[in-house]
Image (cartoon, rainbow, N blue to C red; front, side, top):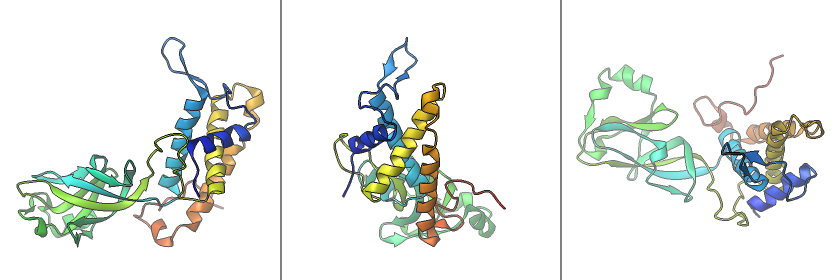
Amino acid sequence: MAVSINNLRTEVYKYLNESSNSTLGQLPNGQGGTTVTGDNVVKDWIIEGINALCRSCVFYPVVATINVPSQSAAAPITSAASITPNGAQLWYPMDVYVGNTRLTHASEQSIRANDMAYKATAATIESAIKYWYRQDNYRVAVYPYNNTASPVALTVHGAGVPPVPATDDAADYSFIPDDLMKQLVASYVAMMLVFKNTDDPSVAQRAFWGNQYNEGRMNLWQRLDANLRLANQPFSMPPIQVPQR
């Protein structure tokens, strides 16, 4: 089964006891009093809530091709030449291949400890590249660096966020059960709409949806494979901080 943006939008309005033509989500766009329709604002927050799930407590696998330029060690993960599923985004690389050869993951600190001149250590052929590391959260780097005459294509497997459906009617979101998707995403959007309308006492009283969203994220995080929650893995941090007793 799967749900669409329209399914999720309907669920949001049901949560807040609003009609489909509600102005609850309407926002000024900063251009002379012109407003953005409530349905469009709700859609933006639906996508935001789904992406937040995939960045905090749901593993959504993607595969990207990233080209490391000649005379370079790193490339941004946002520069993917291709990605599967089409239109998805990669946010956390986990495995890197050059052709069919899997590179060994290492920290930049360990590479530096074994080769103080690692920034100048070059690979003149693709097969000489043996390791990969994360320079920061947005780049994947290789060692030795690419000193071939052309870009080196890396196949990067990792955690990502799903593509936005082609239409609001397309039932494309299927990475968690439908009922859970509706509950959590509708909770997130309802929470955001309540925050927007806190100057309206009748709406502010409905602010409990944020708790349901965060509790749901924690439940999903706790069900992840333990390896994904280890240090230096994509979900090492829980979605919300649990107070220490």
